[in-house]
Length: 256
Ligand SMILES: C[S@@+](CC[C@H](N)C(=O)[O-])C[C@H]1O[C@@H](n2cnc3c(N)ncnc32)[C@H](O)[C@@H]1O
Image (tube, protein in one colour):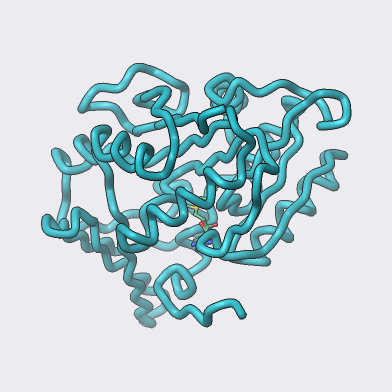
């Protein structure tokens, strides 16, 4: 029986998750290249990708437009339903499922798993490793796993404790301004944050917590999960990594 879960990923306000709808096509082209994917349906020799978590399908739709066969999974049915509607409207086919990535249970089904836009590190270290192992189990031997996260080195250099930020500036929906209070927990190597919305005098606070990994820690994590470390990039377009890079993108390959 599935576990009853109550942690922060279940409680965070939808407005904090739901991201800008459009992925620039050059980002999707980079993902496709980094994962060495061919286009077309699996029957015609194309390749299947699992986009997890897929949110409202912005990565999925951009990849599908490049001819990749996509399955998306997310915790929130509101987001997967939105992804389904967008696919229908664009005349594309894709599969969308509701589920918790901690319970992902595929074996050798996909050519690749993509985990895009700060969607890794939500849980404790052992659970994050278990989630990565599930990604690895989901791909065929020779298949790849790609993770994109904020670049910890840069984030810590520019770390702020408190700031009012318009939701739009974060690529989120809505006109509201959110008060973000951040704390770096050096022992757990996590950013722990409170995001507070103040709408018409009504305060609504949400807590979130994410593990940020260094490139070296990702290498170790990949090894422990059974992946050969293949590439490290510093942006969503595949530029070289430096400590000042906006993002960290890591790609690993499951041995054949
Ligand atoms: C930052 S968003 C990124 C979504 C997508 N990758 C994108 O680039 O638009 C993170 C997503 O993770 C989903 N999520 C959070 N915890 C999850 C879990 N345990 N299992 C599956 N999805 C989860 C949220 O619902 C949200 O859609």
